[in-house]
Amino acid sequence: MPAAAGRRVRRALPGASGLTAREAEVLVQLARGLSNAAIAAALTVSRKTVSTHLEHIYAKLGVSTRTQAALFAMRHGFIGWLPDESGGRRP
Image 1: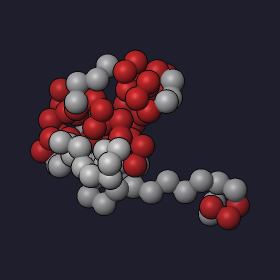
Image 2 (image 1 turned 135 degrees about the vertical axis):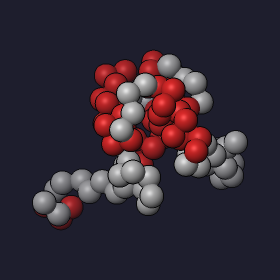
Image 3 (image 1 turned 180 degrees about the vertical axis):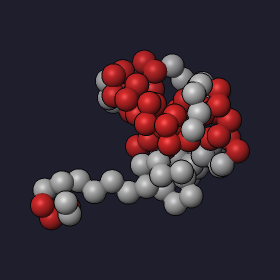
């Protein structure tokens, strides 16, 4: 269904294995070493939502552990992807 029908359109990041922008945000936080609870607090979502995002991320990346997902994030340039509060890039 198109967005005009009242459904949100999710955009995947180019070259990001089909991850949505939100999934990429979760992946970046995971790669920085945050726990699910800390990721939830940082993104203002529930821990269950973070768990669901991680399930989707693992499936899309073809990985089964946090370490594998973090390595993917580092190898594919996700670290530094999110802008900081001043509009620059976070290291």
